[in-house]
Length: 109
Image (cartoon, rainbow, N blue to C red; front, side):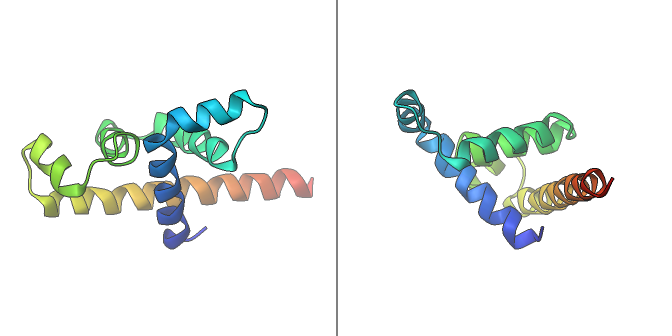
């Protein structure tokens, strides 16, 4: 997986949480969008993340805040939030690639 793909997934997850009530209603009718599984998978990754990365993920992608709004909430600069965002992308890249390697190993045995 690439950083670009991680960013695309995160945008899908932000959309999901912004419209979660609609997704929940749709799921009650018998179908589940793939973004629900994606949000669950990333939730597992974030459960193992540092508290700072976890908090950033929650602020940006669950609450749907901007970098600036998060910076104001945390009383830091927007540049600091962008730096932590890069750490988040790298962490998620490592986690998704580890999962892909583990899946490949299991599939080859």
